Amino acid sequence: MRHSRFTAILSALLLAATHVCAFEVESAKFYDAPSGGNLIRIVSTADIEVFEPIILAFQKLHPDIDVDYTVASSTEVMNAIYIDGEPFDLAISSAMDLQTKLANDGYARTYRSTATANLPDWAKWRDQLFAFTQEPAVMVVSDEAFKDIPLPTTREDLIDLLRDHPEHFDGRIGTYDVRTSGLGYLFATQDSRNTGSYWRLTELMGRLNTKLYCCSGQMITDIAEGRLAFAYNVLGSYASSRLKDTPGIRIVPFNDFLSVMLRTALIPKTARNPAAGGVMVDFLATLNTRLELNAQTGLPPISNDIGDLSNAMRPIRLGPGLLVFLDRLQRDTFLRSWSNSMEQE
Image (cartoon, rainbow, N blue to C red):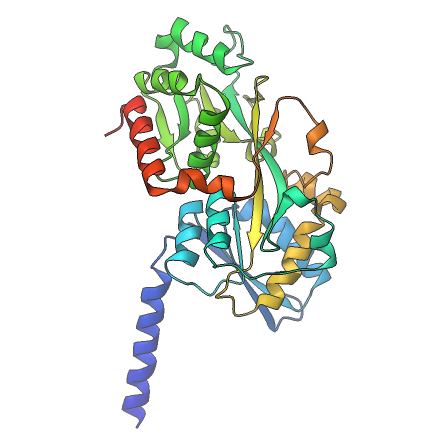
């Protein structure tokens, strides 16, 4: 009897270990609540150091909720829910298109509350997908690399700059690898919609041996340490949070247009504790009332005035329009064109 029980436990552990490794995890941390007993499992693209102040503030209001926080790339967050059926209670991602697909394909629960009702209509979709930040894509530059070169203010300026100084920028440009980064793919497809110069810029960057990255954080680090002159389409919130601790870097928001990503949360169908997921959604939906958290995280909250902020702002809208470039044929065509422009095999 004891042997059969041990065998059953061992089999369960091996099955769990196999399941846990099905999607790739970047990091994870468990946050004990002061009087825990209730557990919320979150999978998110936001780095631990960025999201931790939100978790700690949340637990001050809800001291009974332990938080199991897992960080993964936007593609892996999608895989965790869509392919592996992981029982997370909340999925948070910067890739609006992948989140929209999860909701559209029936992988998200419907949730309504006073907090979500107060969100602007453009910041939610089907009462299943809820935005809580608005974050622009920017260019981040090395002050040293641009000390004798004028800063570009538009993409056309950047194209001219790369043509005039190819030797200065060869091997010193960074951007997302859109084949593996969900956020990078989102920004790239939005660029292609917003300007005819996108493909010319991509071809130039390809000829100058651009380095490809999964994440904004490593690009910013490589700029600060002199390995890059600039990085294109970096998440502005990450760059802003690093400015005070990382000398020698500067944010350049383009004047022609700024793609603004909405970071979103959804409660997966597979959630074991959807009620706790809803409590966290409510907390995130009210970040615009928590100014101290905005300062700590660098995450700009949802603003009702986004349409009035700047003529250059191009908020990416939630909805079925985001699914166009997720169509297999459309995606394959885009990635083939991108790979050819970037001269990537």
